[in-house]
Image 1: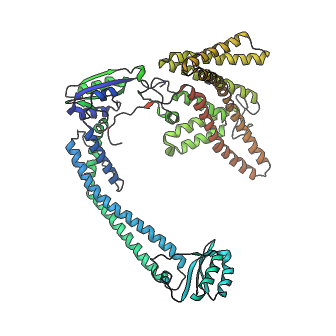
Image 2: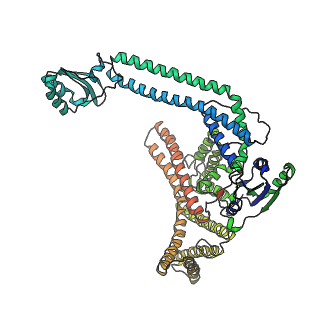
Image 3: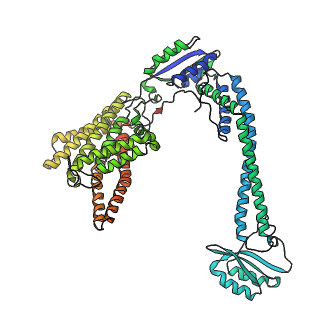
Length: 627
């Protein structure tokens, strides 16, 4: 629960022809993460299952493309597990390829029809603008010998001036369509006044409109032709869709067989990436939880008919960065696991922060958002929408429950502090005490995080960092000494010798460690050491002060409720109750989200950044079926 499961590196030596059976057994166990070391890859260069893997991926891609275009529900009955031969897989791949050729041909036709349908739809939309014109649109596409003819748009504010100017040029103007900004006009007149009309149109900001070549007759006739073409396309589309579904029904049995065959071949195909061999011998290597190894050994002894050699060993410290991390938690921790993984995956050998994160997150959320009514709304929403939230439901239930508990301690129900007596204190009436408690909480949190950092570094073999770095024992002594010095100063306005030694001695050790750790030229070495030493001091100070926001948001929560009640007091009934209801909803939704973000920030930057590397590798077991 507090660390990733202990791993064993196993090596399974078998005959190459037995590799598919071994892959099947390993997949059934579901606890084996295949992996091959670089040394093995050099000494065993052959990859006996590579061709099988490529063929499998080809067949799977073809099947996925086909299934994406049809309605397919595989039979519930799972066929008996068996080994899939290369020839079977090749036959299925070839048949899927032929089937996909037919589907892709229809797919291309549907794509063309869709493009044509889009074009026709746009033409029909454009034609709507010309629907009031009662003449053949083809005249705008040909040269005229005696007629000066224009069609286009002008800004609506220029219509009146254009009508007057065009009349003086012995031309007629017809406004046949308009929108919010422009008017569509047709201008016609004798050709001898063309230059005068062109000048008028230029000053009126006239923009010519190009008539599509498909508009070759009267607008009503064009509309009928385009509608007929669109109907024909829809009929062709429906016909191809019917052919697709008919072929899918005819091939339903084959597709089911192909689906199950690929599911049974998947394990060997997955293993092919790491399977190595030479001649008739093959080697399978990877990681397995230590607790699972005895069962794996029994499984192979009972079900593997041919000779094999199975060995195992624990990972070395040098391998810790490469060992995959497998974490197992109770289902109600699932949403908190997701939030931890959002920062990173725990490295093998270091502490898994999930349980610590869960407890501290719930505690801080309740502290900052303590209200019985608001907590009940959050928990109630989590339960009401549990089908939609799924595994995230426990998050809202836990946050709401914590808010209810602290609401009882604060005596707050929907912001009212007269309904229930406070079992502990009222933040808004005792702000100094809340700030003090938040500061103590932050100190305890940082000390705990530092202890975890020391343990992680020691277990990873970084003994000098665990003792002398600013995140190690020296840093913790410096932090405690600084706190003692600050307390002494606040009490007596002086800092005693013991406090001075408790600060300066560990600080000098930290600077000495950083000096030794840096291998830079002298000037840069001095500068880097001083900067990193100053940063160490500043980090402890800033991290501690950051926890004051725990108290600040508990005060802010109460202050927002006071603001809502003040605004409601300015109104008469029932308006004041409407303000109270809407104000409380505003607090729950907006402030609830802000508090969640602030708690995550404290967890990530003041907690995880101190002891949690987050650069671990996820455990990816060999499993059955297509994924």
